[in-house]
Length: 367
Ligand code: SF4
Image (cartoon, rainbow, N blue to C red; front, side, top):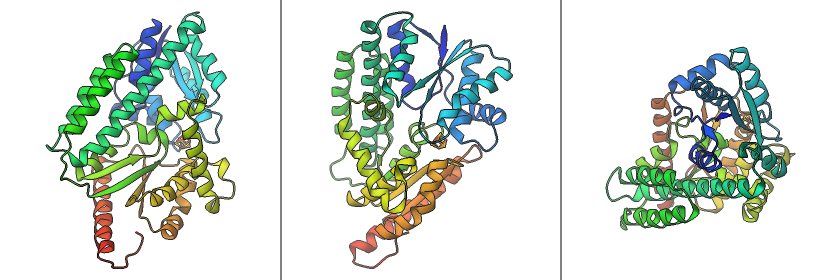
């Protein structure tokens, strides 16, 4: 079995570590590029959401490099993700690829573990579970590196220093082969990031990114949104982290579960059946951003994403009621980097001006 899998931000490095420890042969697809997206868009249904197209492109590139098995995340949730793998399997087989598709259901813990064991080559839980937990540990560490970068970038002493540090520690974490090395790496990384911050430098504004998880996690698809905002001088916080959501799914993150439930409750006045829609979380997280003193919210979503289109339809009202500017940022395969940068810069200008007027006690509209 030679396994390939689609990219999703730091997940690639975490999966690589797990498979390496299990002795499982893998093919990592090339980083998501223009070619990946074009391939996916060529063979996918035209109106399906962007992550379907990009992950299909990753699978094609992995199979072209010799993989014979595809591992793909799935869910029993109420959006299209549950249909991704069967539809992708049909498309790829029609294209002539011979392979086995293994869906990994991350919101049903027991199924998730059972499916994952298939990569253990007949080994028992004693071998598979520590490798799996090591992968989660690494994923959480990689995501902490992103958080440190988002906090440091608008305060960095020297332009570009944060991105250099991020790349350096990311590469070291990629090579870390056990929990002790991950722990030591993170201790040194935290202190490096703290040293890179200038005490006198304040971020221009604080923005929370909410919306669709895949789009938040994959920088090659979201045009490096976090880095772009940080380079303008904005401190960014993201509402979705894959590591946390896996921990929640396997019942190891009670705090995260409570936060998630609180966000859904906050959205209730705007949605009649909030439990049925993951976009409700974006609404709740926007309201929480107001309580936590953020200056603005970016709602990132793939064009035609069902839950986030619902969220977008009431976001104007949420923004008005709670007095927070919200920038909806729909992205598809035709989006271009220049357009995204221009919209972000204009949004940051608006919230900085608004902040300034507010501090001078002048009444200003929400956005
Ligand atoms: S959340 Fe949206 S983009 Fe993601 S799979 Fe569901 S419909 Fe598609």
